[in-house]
Image 1: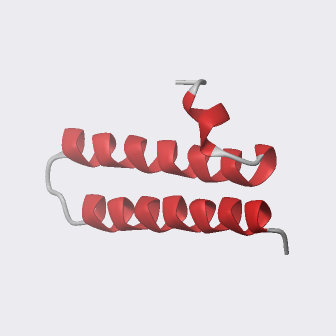
Image 2 (image 1 turned 180 degrees about the vertical axis):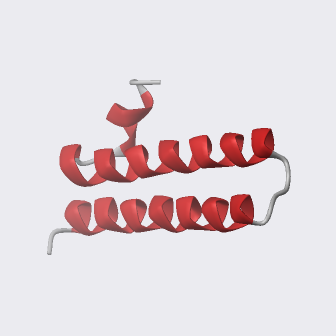
Amino acid sequence: MARGMRNKFVAARMYRDRAEELRAIADGLAQESERDLLMSIAGDYERLAKSAETRGGVARCASQF
């Protein structure tokens, strides 16, 4: 596997792991607004992961925000 291809999948895994962590934290929160905020951020990390996989990098994804 080419180095660039491996790096994009490593980045995608990192973003997905971070999203999973945020969802786990959100599940333990009592206040709905805090849960919603963390779930929104988790969704952003999922989008970053997808972008890293499909377009080959974070730089292009970051320009979408």
